[in-house]
Image 1 (spheres, helix red, strand yellow):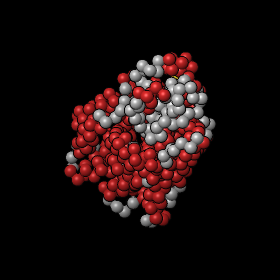
Image 2 (cartoon, helix red, strand yellow):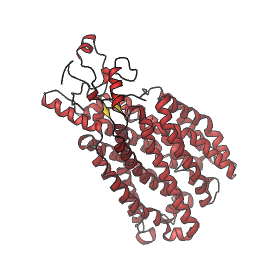
Image 3 (cartoon, helix red, strand yellow):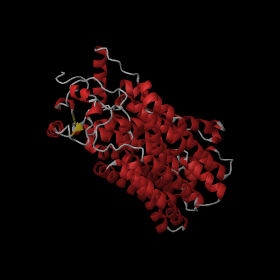
Image 4 (cartoon, helix red, strand yellow):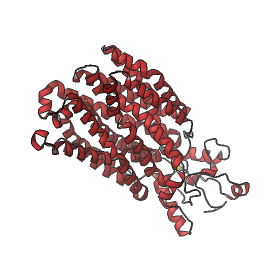
Length: 502
């Protein structure tokens, strides 16, 4: 790709005057990024494995919530134990915004790939160490404090993980297949959650409840060690994203020619507050529904509806697999119909099906429980399935990682990660098994409004980046039709320079 000066470092497009349009040079074939499909596959695989690792831990802890409360707070009542365990889960999300900001700042300066390898090492190591923790009977109150500390380390690392991998994949993917490529991230996430559920269920069935309390709970966390080592090895084989490399080249060229380029922190604070706010709402809605269906559901089925621990876990596994498959469908569908229609459908469907779904769960039959969970899976898949393609397209390349880290993790800390704790507290306080449904309906209505402020990004270049395509022929066709292509806003591209500039 030919190095060019960034015309709009803030990532916002200003209306160009006719004279400016006449002076600005046209898009050339050398400006267009032609994706290396073999590297794209490695990128998707390496990032999806990391997401699998992250959500494996989330799944394991969610399905062991009752056990972890009994192990680390044995003298408390069962209700307090559950609230403690879910509180520790929520505490993880307190550290996520810090991790997102710190890792994002470094990732925007030195590269995405290096930071993502580091976050994966931290995540795998902290999960493995939880499996080695002494219990309350050995260390007393220090044991739950150490658990909280390791969960905070996990939170810091995962705060940089999701924002980084979504940025990374979005920058590697061709514009017309970004939804397809990004959908593999959350596909890996929910497969990881299902894997955690399967591992916990097998242990509960083969070892029994008492053996799990006596030390069997450690095994799922220790398994994270070899999984993490494989994921790190896979991720180190990925190259830096083309968009970041082009941004670095353009920034160096700007410095050599004495052009002023705003500091990334200034760009984020001064010009990104609107997309940051919208992104936070979208993340809050999608992940509140997602965490209610995944992390909280084992506790709800066991503690509120009276299912046995193994039954509650087994009932959610097929739903998680269904959700993962639906996410793989939602991604490419959004490439064809757009992100906004699917987001609107997801929010509307959640508002409609939440109450019937929880009424079906409350019936207490296996068939009604599965049907209720499947109803919930459809809107969650529509919102989560396009999230990884929608959010990176809301921010310019220079500050994409840190903006994503801030928006995603703040929303997750305040809403998503606290969903199990808040919903369980509401259920205990009201005595109503329908409390989670009303909570989700409120979020769905807010989400439907927020989608109206989202700019459609399907098929369009990322802000601050040149177009990205699959083949040389597609690049030539794009350049030939650039003046009338509805997906190409020439005023927003970082073309810079004048006609004939080289």
